[in-house]
Each structure stands twice: as C-alpha cells, then as structure tokens.
Length: 299
Image (cartoon, rainbow, N blue to C red):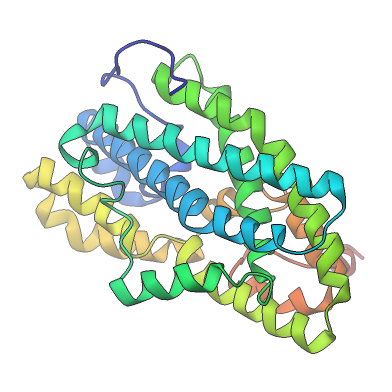
C-alpha cells in the first residue's frame, strides 16, 4: 500500500470537513471537537468502502464486459490497464481501512456499505452484462470524475489532514484522469450507435441507480452517524434531529453542488447537455440544469 509510511495520526482529520454530509447540517455545530473528529474519521472509512465497492464490485466487471467485444487496439490496451489499476486502488483503500480499524476491517471490507443479499447477487450479475446495459458506462464516468474532484480537495488541505489518507488520494488522483479518458472513449464508441428508445431506457436506469445508491445520504450515511452515537452515547437524544437533517440534505443546494455539479463532474454534465434523453436526470441530480435552460434564464 502506498501510504506516507508513518503510523496513523488519530489526532487529525482524515478528510476535508466540507466533503462530509453531517458538516452541512445545523446539528453539526452542536457536536464537540472530539465528536466532529471521530465523525470525520468514520466517514472517511465509509468513503474508502464506497471506493472499494465501486472499483471491485462494479467497475472491474463493467470494464471486462467491454473487453469481450472488438475495440480499437489502443482502447483495448487501455482497458486492461484500467482494470489492473482499479484492482490496485481497491487494495490500497482496503489496506488503509484495515490499518485504521483492524477489529472491523481485518474480517470484512464493508461495515457501513451493506446491500441486501439478493440485491448484491443481482447487482453482481447485472454488471457482468454491461454491454446490454451501457448506462453503467455513465456511472463509471461520473463516479471517476467525482473521485478526481475529491482527491484534489484532499490535496488542497494536505497539511492539515492525516498523511496516510493524503498519500492514497494522491496515488488515486494520478490514475483517475486516464480512467476518465477511457470512459469517454467507450461512450463515444457505444452510445451513438444505440437506438433512441434504448438510450432513453438506459438513461432512466442510470438516473434511478444514481438516485438510489450514489447521491444524498440514506442507509449507509446514517449508519456512520449511528456508529458515532455508539462512541458518544450522550448524543442519543440528538439522533432524531441528526437523522432528519441528514435525509433533508437532498434539498441542500450547497451539499448537492459538492456531490455532482458542473464543477465536480464537468465532463459528465456536458455530455448530459448533448443527449436529450438526459433532460429528466435532474431528479437524481438537483444541481443539473441543461445549458439551454441556463442560457434562457440569463436572457
């Protein structure tokens, strides 16, 4: 694992505070410094779990599905590199979590991310048929762009954050730009060849899956807060407010802009503008507004 080579410093935040959901709630101001620090660290473990899940349970299977079709030689070679790097990333974040919380992560990769057994089985089978459901390529692109933005935010605060977490994000950043280029090459090759009806169907599947699993905090995000309360039982009376405010983040403009926006995911949003089937996607991404609508509002 490419860390800083030093022991974990638990006196520091593990990630930028503004990237954590609870930071954007009114309740956050009522937490002590110690409680905020522990929440930050717990959410960092969850962010690492998200990366492991996305890159091992989804991205590698999606990419392998496309290596089985005829591709330009440079793209085929690129995808093999892409797959190998995703596996390396998963291991890097896995080892970091184990180093920080061995009682949990020496036994399993996931503590906060939990899919129901049947949902997990269905997803694993589904991603292996990504050629039939190319909306998965859009998920790859938008998640890789978001990861690139997050890594840059880590590096902006490198002097304040835990060095091992900064080190793995620096390594992640080094590879993500290439991944985004390969995602776009695949989309350029595949999406225009699809029928209009198939594109509409896949765009709807994309919006549904993003809204269900990848946007505002729901199940896993609340588990992070519940774990914080285990550590600080005095917070138990605050749980109803914490839960409500976390769920209400779906209507928090600042938080939504930090998740997916023209600043965070510029290439994906620009591609939404090119294809009419993505006009309704703002149900999953409240921050998305087609450029044509923005132009009209400025007149």
